[in-house]
Image (cartoon, rainbow, N blue to C red):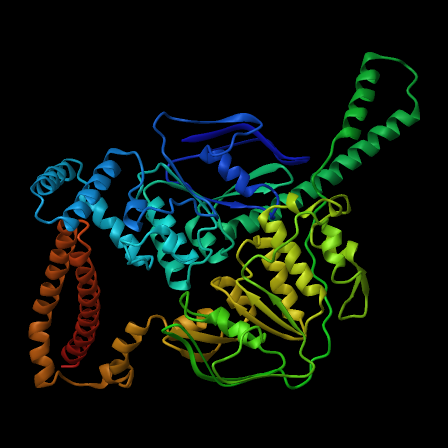
Amino acid sequence: MLRIENISKSYGDKNLFTNIHAAIGELDRIGLIGVNGTGKSSFLKVIAGIDDPDQGEIKHAKGYQIEYIAQEMDLYEDLTVIEQIYYGESEQMRRMRAYEQALLNLEKEPENESFQEKLLQLQQKMDQAEAWEANANAKTILTKLGVTAFDKKVHELSGGQRKRVAIAKALIQPADLLILDEPTNHLDHETVEWLEKYLQSYRGSILLVTHDRYFLNRVTNRIFELDKGNLYVYEGNYELFLEKKAEREAQEISDEQKHRNTLKRELAWLKRGAKARSTKQRARVERVEEMKGKKFDTKKENLAIQAGSKRLGNDVIDLTEISKVFGQQTLIHDFSHQIIPGDRIGIIGPNGTGKTTLLNMMAERILPDKGEVKIGETVRIGYYTQDDEDLDGDLRIIEYIKEVAEVMHTADGQVITAEQLLEQFLFPRAQQWSYIRTLSGGEKRRLYLLKVLMHEPNVLFLDEPTNDLDTQTLAVLEEYQESFPGVVITVSHDRYFLDRIVDKLFVFKGEGEVSVYYGNYSEFLETNAIPKQTKAAAPKESKPAASVKTKKKLSYMEQREWETIEDEITQLESRLTEIEQEIAEAGSDIGKVQPLFTEQQEVEDKLEEKMERWEELSLLKESFESGK
């Protein structure tokens, strides 16, 4: 167990949290909730021992291991991927690292007898440390996370690849507590879903911050909420947290009302003027004074988004056979679509397939190699980009907003000043003259979002809006888009966000192929779960569902298939076991491991197909025998 005892932390003049207590037990899965700027990342750093609290302490047993993944990955630029993930001082990590270095040396000089002898010695040490399973597990995790270039230097990797390496490194290190600060940022849908399932069976405890509410709900069993310097602890996942928080706030309001009624009665008693200066009366006066000083946390700061938009005509954006190639990679090939008023479009697909490129072409920031992008005359685009706008830290918050406008006109004709808008975005008047450099990363993103909306767009482009925005801001942004009269087009990996706001998807499949799906993300998954499964299921879908019930007996060929299918399943299962053993024995030999991973996937697919066919034949056989 890790104990948090009476810790406090300030940043400049701002108190982040004060005198908070909590405990993290074995196998806890804790989600940390709070509006941006409340100190979530600072709290995680204090727990991880990266930062010191102003007061209080973190207590845990000697040898308690904490692994921490920050939003900004702290990786060693000159190490290879395989060296990076084996970084650590545990005995197992040191032996695996030495083994990997010996392999590298022998690859360079395969005839060097001293290198050969060294490798044999290290293989024995790997046996003693029982490190082969961890070695194979590391490479499996990397493959699942989409990192296959094990010999690449870290500085050669993209931001998304670096994130995956950092996650893999943390997952294979032996740890009692795994701390994750926005682990789903820069990961595509498939990878997020894999990570979600992996963490559900993780052997240690987990403390995480994430904007992905599906992820949060499915992984956690406790919630810590940072709110106005206090830490509230809830048992249960995110769904239960929402219910219990509403109950807590209702109870606080009830307690405040009871307190007021009691105080009112006490004051009335004093005003009636009991003349005796008794000890009892003096105590009552003191109690009234104490009651006057008591404060209740019932004043809630709620984020509100009010924005207007310019009139949008019938012509919005027409894409006609557009194509785009970068280097040797075709991102978009002959894609056509007409965007109309009221569209709510999500853009999904693996990282690096061209999603942001499409947004940039529609915003006329880059041109297609061929085809045409035609923008309607009344279109006014507001573009919230994925990369941080270069916010001038020497500007004050109010100055940054007033660069756009002093006031904004809402859809219902109201005029709202810049100061009022900042208040609605949880920047109180006292903070508005602070410098931008004093803001947290999430607060800067919220401020940038306000600036985009102040342009009063009628077509809103959102590129990964869920990165670095807290769950409260996202919920309000979702509500805002429901009443937004214009067009919304968003690139997002956040499944909940997509389900809330879009009714159409542009699906990037790679190699330039982009398809259109009508529906939200969950509906898309139901009908297009995984391409390989769709292909395997296609022959079955062509048969009427009733055929299993109406067919009288197995055909000759089906009977022969039934007699052999169980043996085939057994053989496939045996081969899977052999492959897993071969992967473990191959260690870090990339030339051997990669083909084995490929074969493993192929065998798993065949096994799944055979199992489905076995069930189908079983139903046919049972139906025939029961009908005799």
